Amino acid sequence: MKAISFSTDWSNQNQENRLLESRCTSLAELHRCQRLAKSSLFLKLETSRNHIRKLLTGDGAMKISAVLPDTTSRVMFEKIFSVMGKIQAYSKASFLDIEEIDEFKNLASLPFLSITPEFHLLCVHVRNFMDDHAFWGLISEQSIEALHARINKDERRLASMRGRRNILRKIIECSFVRNVLFDMEITFEGVENFLE
Image (cartoon, rainbow, N blue to C red; front, side):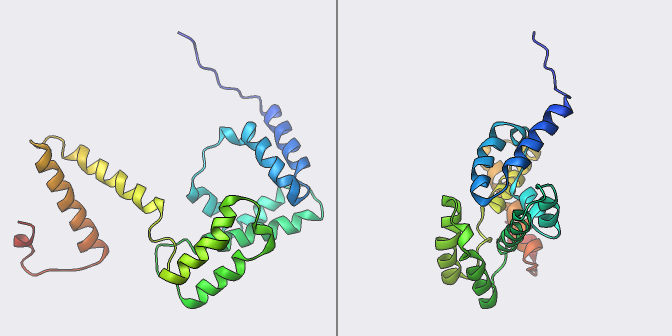
């Protein structure tokens, strides 16, 4: 059996960081740096949308730009990260006001956001969706995945019950109670007879 070893050669990772930082001197270089990052340092990290949200909101933009080389582009990158954080903030699980939708349109129409197909989707199609429906984050993958994880947990908890049909019925009941009664704070009189 082959043993798994982990590298603790921090000097090599620091060299990769310095190489990455030295190449990020303009917006055109950023795209090339993405390929470099995928092939080296950042493949070793696991990030989620929540990590990205935390990086881009608050003082995250300032912290990210602080690790970039001290060039004239540094301020531009901080502004870009800040705008991306503001755009990310509109992906919340609530309805948006007209003012919020207009602000999103202004932020998403900035010229530097046409780098990738994802930004095209964001700039063109999300704005139209927000106009039509007044929300963006209510039906995101994040909420569906969270529900999926919760249902899997319920299924493991109820695995000792007999019959797949009974397990599924109980999972639906648990989801109903959790979502309707607790999340929406709806109460019923005679709830003991309601679930029968």
